[in-house]
Length: 379
Image 1 (tube, rainbow, N blue to C red):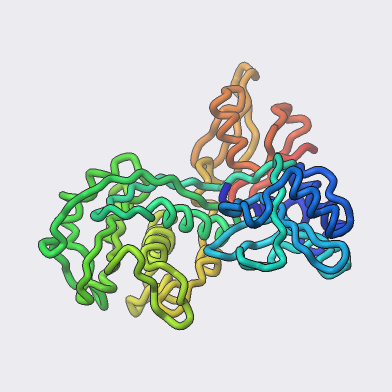
Image 2: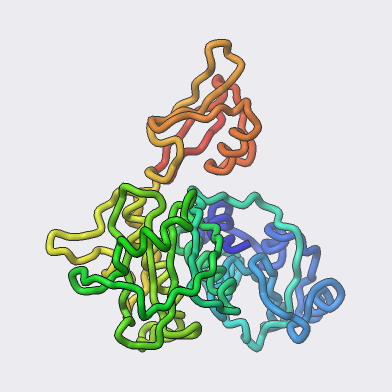
């Protein structure tokens, strides 16, 4: 589970009256009673949780128990990026209000341990889960960890509206023999070479990303995509000098170059191609570079510009219709329709609405269109 902040905010908006911290946390995660003192909370963690000294790693959904004052504090981890835990909590300021943005380090000395339990609210599903083929020209032990961090950052920055699945293919191309061409202020891989050697891996995927490694600074910054919207998938590529290379900027000291370039190329340039939103300005500069560059990483700001309606498989002007015999109900938009009498279609509808179950009676159902899709509401 990568991110719960959007889900928690949906049910309990910022400054919601949440009450005492432990009772609020128990309303999100089934952790049982923990009492109202540091001692009772420590006892709960000791008996049915994990003490910090025994904890191998934090996970999203953990209820973190902190030793503070006389009563202690309980907060729920809604997302994890790097070594930072973002918390959903109530009564942190002793005002019984809910907040979702405070961050603490995984090494925070006040952490006693965690309690884990079943999530008690329905998770909101993303609007679009992209299929990505990663063609990796080097074998890294940390690649899955890097992919997981990319997914985490994407879900948080898109407010849980975007996610992706990755399939990896390994190659052993001699990088020194890969042809490059000059494009404005950067170099990109020769499109003909890319189409012949890389694109065939991507059949059936939304994006293909060719990652290659070269220790020479000459290639550093040779990032780009072949600007060709007539084919599927959208083609992207990125180069790094080593597995653990960091961006190196004083303002971005902790971002791995693979992570920055993967998100930059696919969900910066590539996504704007996917949604048919212009990336280049009249002077040939890129809009994406205002948000993602060597000194700035504002993925949230960039994704706020995405036209999410273009990612909805049904489209806009959504309405409820029926078949001629009246036995099948449809959710229909200007891109197409799905029948909700069919179990597979019902599952699809549930995945792109904020409802986990829907009624098919048009007398009690209305369709509300939103920029990121639609929801079904009872009248």
